[in-house]
Amino acid sequence: MAVVSALASAAALSAGSFATLVGGPAVPLLPLGHANHVPHPGPPHRPPPPPPSTTTTTTTLPPTTTTTTIASSGPSDPSGQAPPSATAYPGYTQALVDDFNGSSLNQTTWNGFYQAPTHVDGPWLASHGSVAGGMITMSEYQDPALNNEWVGTGLCTRSSWTSGMAFVRARADVGARVSVVFGLIGVSTWPPEIDFYEDMPTTNTRQYFTATTHYGPNDSMVVKANSTVDATQWHTYGVAWNSSTITYYVDGTAWATIPNPEPSGTHALDLPQKLFMQIETYDDNLPTSATPKVVNLNVDWVAVYTPA
Image 1 (cartoon, rainbow, N blue to C red):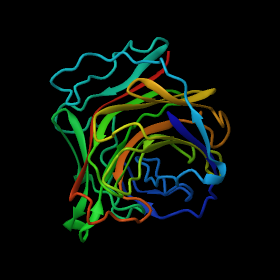
Image 2 (cartoon, rainbow, N blue to C red; image 1 turned 30 degrees about the vertical axis):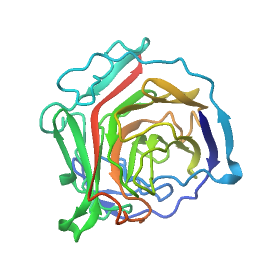
Image 3 (cartoon, one colour; image 1 turned 90 degrees about the horizontal axis):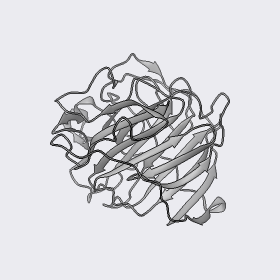
């Protein structure tokens, strides 16, 4: 597998305005760098640019042998695969698991679907998220409620963690210029952020995604790229992070590992981070005439583990 690695930096801009998101009070946006990020309750997010060619190196990973033991599927698992068991990872304790049975979000786990009509990368409305059929659906489409603007949504956990393993089992429809992101983000400051799946397709495909570690006061980044996964099909995306390394997973197999570039400090990766998931347009590049009228992101389950 060819993996692209890059380091990049972006200077922080001035603080933004207020955004009110479901499940929490109006809060000031953090200084603009990678994006306007609102850690309570959800992080408005802009994808990073592709790795700059001046700092790009190509590495061929050896065959991986790390695997994940997955429980058998049941009627509440539309992807055909249940979450990992509580004892799937020796040395870790299951801190969160949600397979989205029922018809609404578990309000003790989630802050609610994002409600941010003026979000910088396209509006978010809570009405674009739903729970049914054993999964979450988050939808991007032109909404008459906001003058037919393209609107998406997202959500994030109430809990946060300083190290551990996080997994999201999901799929998404094709959609040119409709971006999907799964990641971790700092609770009280930004960076840190660890995006373990992030795409920004320019055509109606989902065959390429990046995993990006954000750290330091000037949003330094380490970017890994993967072009081997068809994200319109069900896959499990994940990350394991600690003071030494950050490892990215697809379907239980580690596909990239980096040294932890900033294990301590004011914007370090050992600070508490929440898990978030979202669908959006990006960088004001609106979907094209070829983009489907509705682009759905489906999430079957989420699981988080912390060191025992």
